[in-house]
Length: 264
Image 1 (cartoon, rainbow, N blue to C red):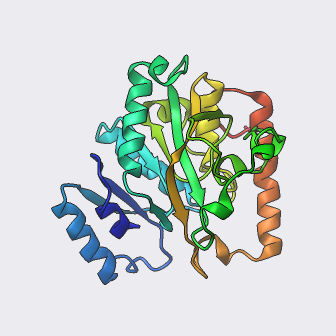
Image 2 (image 1 turned 45 degrees about the vertical axis):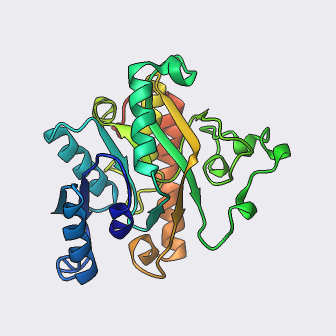
Image 3 (image 1 turned 135 degrees about the vertical axis):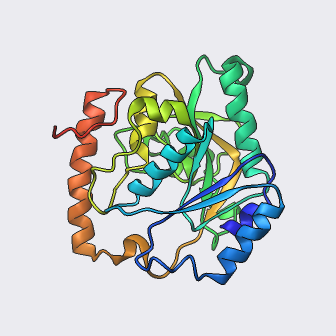
């Protein structure tokens, strides 16, 4: 991903939460280190921080805290196996800034907390991933809180209209102050951290903020054959997802603009 970011336009810096099992994995990665040097030559600063934690949400929270300490207005939450289309970062910044200044310029009546694009599969053509017209009104495409489908972020709509949803999928822009306001990422979830990135965005939605998808912002989700959440066996993964899912259901039932452990 870092090599890809070198080609991105816009004003941004990079924070990497290193949660590798081997604490020297990134330190000894030749490609990463040379890419970070090149990224700095293109005018972007970078920070790699060793983060200890029981799920990936601890890494996201470390990034949010870093953004707060260094007074960043916007953040991007992304996995390390995402490749962005050209101008993804620039387009996101422009739209987030416009929404913050005057939402009516983009046809909305309140500011947005999060903005995502289309997250596509690299081994399929864009044509294969277009959403048929007849499917646009299907409940599975509506991005509602009561569904676990993410077709609204992974099937390209027939037009480029920016749409509003109740939850997003894939890498996304977020307003730092809004995520801090609602309590950040739910680090109390299981080691799987199932749906964890969605908690602060949905809490912001409960607070009256918009969650938007721009179909012109596209990225491709590559997948490694091992590592990450793949360390969990299927049975263990199912049990952890069930436990996290129960907390999620209670969270959305309460509809409170706050990320907090429902068990407390």
